Length: 152
Image 1 (cartoon, rainbow, N blue to C red):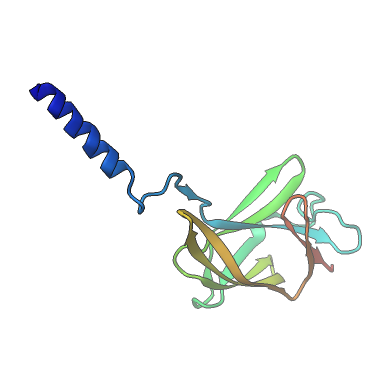
Image 2: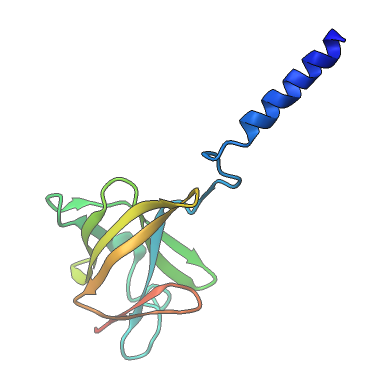
């Protein structure tokens, strides 16, 4: 009899604690935001790293809000697609003002205001403002890559 009472008490405790309204059934996180850029020749549409015009070793990203200190970036070279990845954004500092240079050529300025949000137990990065200045560009709707047109 004592065993039955103990088992009922354990089951009741589990049932009460597992039905809390504060808990989420699913926890999800999009992770930080990264932005990808492809530098294309404005006249031909060719990738300027693939055709040898630019060298990835000459890329420099500077933080204009932080005394022009260098910003880490990733250069991704796969299947003749050469892109520059900036980020993560949205965790910590929300507003960035970067300039991307290749050698002595200033390619574009990026102004981004992004912040981490949480809704329905899911966290994600929301972009409040994204500006790319001093360059013509478009975002490829299939890949999400920002295609920056560089006039040589």
